[in-house]
Length: 298
Image 1: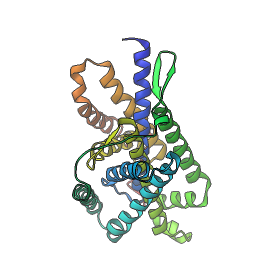
Image 2: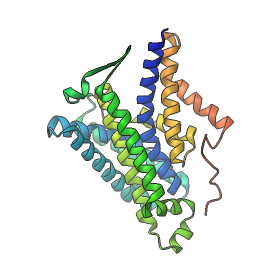
Image 3: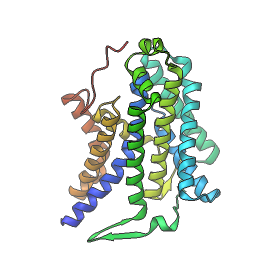
Image 4: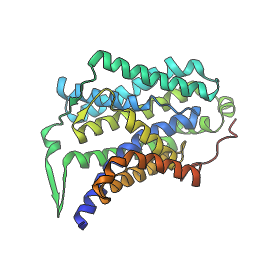
């Protein structure tokens, strides 16, 4: 096992972690405000992948325009889901929202199968994004660099938005205490909708990245990445945006190194490794790396 092989695995882990981190951020944003684990989030990931395919293959849009379209499509899907499925249940027990999110996920998956069939689609990026680059003994494609840079730019933009804008401050206040936020004149419904829109836009962008990286998409593709991103959010500390980022990269690197460094017969157990890591983290650090106990929030 050479140093260049290990370096290649680290790069693959960084790419995979970038995608997990973007999806995990949505989980954390939504949970941080409404205490809801939205298991339909993985299907937003799928919507992003198919919106990209439609933009590139059907509309022949330039790649930067396709990114903008995917961000908008993801945000719109998140807003529609929040208003149609979750807003009417506001104030109900948490288990109600959990069950509703599973129902929404199943509905979206079945609608996709009915309308576009379960047949996988080939995902082709523009030729210049598929070009091979070489750095010493390390080879990678242009799209690999784009995925990492785009993920980092989006995460930095999100952190700046949440920390330094009035809307971001209002969202943080809403996450801390609904009643106090209302007394301060904050529109709670608007902040919740904003969290769904931003989180869903990032998940949709991860779908774009997934299709670009692996070259194939399907209507049911979002289930496993969505569950793994939830694991990443828990590892980092569900409800914490920095924790979601950290958890995504930790999980992505760990998963790739598990497959790449162990004997080939263990590669089929990568999913067991992921969910085993979840159990271990919950046993040792129930709140994750950067999470905090939110049981007493008003």
